[in-house]
Image 1: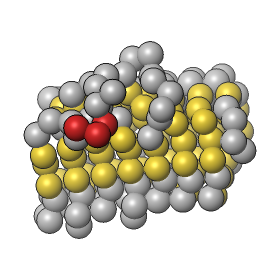
Image 2: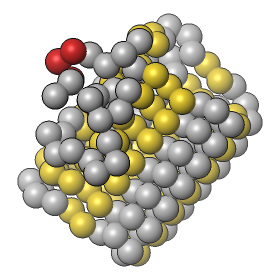
Image 3: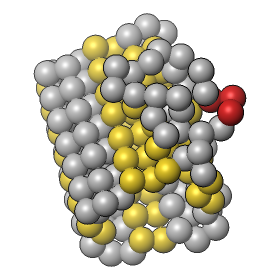
Length: 178
């Protein structure tokens, strides 16, 4: 898939894309009964506002880099997302523009280990985790990098919040400013 994947309002049992290229994934208010996995792929934007995923939402090894500008300034926009298990954005995950999970509910853990989150000219924040509720652990470890601010006001983490071997760097990278 090299074009847009527009799934807003849809219902599916499972969605898996490995080693793919997608310009824009739009799946707002969709319901995925099992897992949504976009693995080792490339995308310009991923928008899952108010979506429900019954099991795992995985972006392992995926690169999100535009150049398409998000109307709200976030390349990964998952506000009010509901996930029945885990969110692994790890093992080479890269977002070269803000990632927003504002108000998301995660029944398991959110693992960003080894992931890279960069701000861009549309947003000074690499991540917006305000009001996120994670029943399990939040892992930002093992070479996790946030280039730009991380908003976490009102976050709830039920177990461990581990930032071992991570880097939180001020401001957006100059080459990400357009």
